[in-house]
Image 1 (cartoon, rainbow, N blue to C red):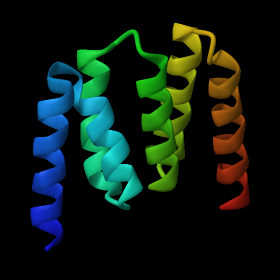
Image 2: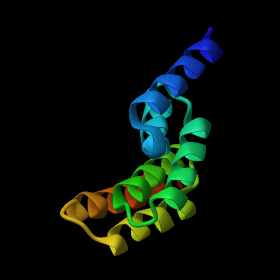
Image 3: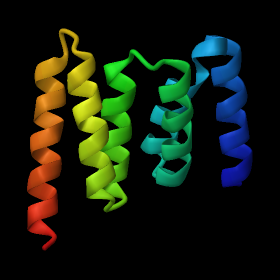
Length: 105
């Protein structure tokens, strides 16, 4: 059942957004709790959209949720370095990841 749903989601997203598929696919995977699938999609998106702070920021959230804080911090810093009007949000992500890492110790 879940496999069919994911395939349907993948196909719909491909039809709607074509070459921008991976960022939206990452978001949809994250929303249904597929963190591994979200990570894969966002990693592909960082290659396809290397200037998108949003993609790096989203990948940072996924990695933090997976407990991979060092990688998450690196991706949050990449998002900040790329800059954008959303830079304050990327800083907030960085702070949240640092707090999460400290609370897990």
